[in-house]
Length: 143
Image (cartoon, rainbow, N blue to C red; front, side, top):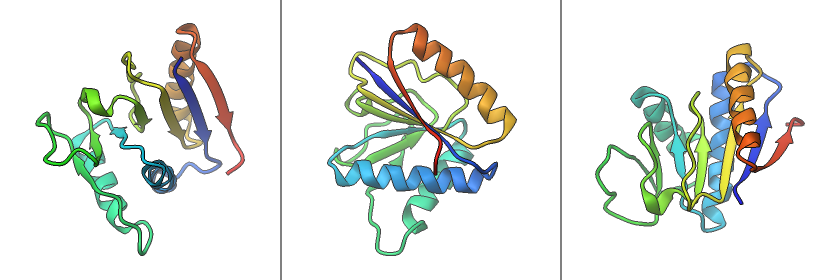
């Protein structure tokens, strides 16, 4: 069963949302998870790509933007607005405004929301869809 964790930040800052995502991605990477980070646009993918290099001094997370071609190395975090390729479907970080349509291989989805009304509306819609699909849901608000 897929487990979905919602993280609702107290701020409306998109920058804070992206930085928080980087911290969770780093934690996943350090535990041996090579995830897919879903974005809405190529521009958002580039922002996450840049932040993963700079968000914390001394941090190294191998990552690249996914453009449909298989990555050159397997053990890498992929970032993109396309559907996740099969080897990266296990763990998804959804920074997009869309329902990620989890595959058979998906065991974890991380939803990171800021406190803006637009983000919360999209998040509530995805929450309902996950719930209707019978997924296990948890919500974290105290960050």
